[in-house]
View (cartoon, rainbow, N blue to C red):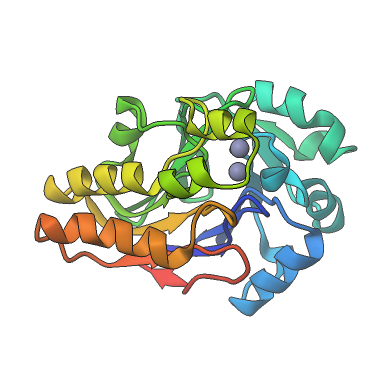
Length: 259
Ligand SMILES: [Zn+2]
Ligand SMILES: [Zn+2]
């Protein structure tokens, strides 16, 4: 399987997952042009995209979804509540490109098995995804207020995970955001902090439940890539864990990983 974070962060998210001739986009939260260019940079033509899977209806996850679907005739998959919530923003989508999954129920696109799982976030019915193909598993969980048992369970036995490390709690609480927004981010339906991401990774690596991890959906104001990386790797080091940690950043494609 192939994995590349094309863009990750509150300014827009799009993740590429590929296996054989199936090429998937998880979210399309940037302009169509930006996503097209990022795909071409990793050698994938937008016309090859088999489907766009939507985690939730926030703008940073759906901005270019409608445009790409119309431009390249790409089906969009989301659960019913998300479709209803994003209807107005994605605009006119051809009936045959409007596809539904049920949260918690596995489905297939080509040879990739996909499991959408529930996560706590302030959207209609937000999900993370696990992808299985060729004996490998990749999981994605960003935009979640806290690590639930259910999400942790779905991350287990992954060869690669993309996990949110949204903010440094101190930078957020002392930073410029208005209090209601700080409260929202810190809440159970907000975003995962560097420390919370680190705690989750310590547990998963200790149990040998994951292969490698990418940190993503970093806040531009309340975090820096260096701070997220060092906070998490220092926590891992304390437990003698030396696993590779990749970064999924806002303005550039991550390395293209093949597992
Ligand atoms: Zn987001
Ligand atoms: Zn969100």
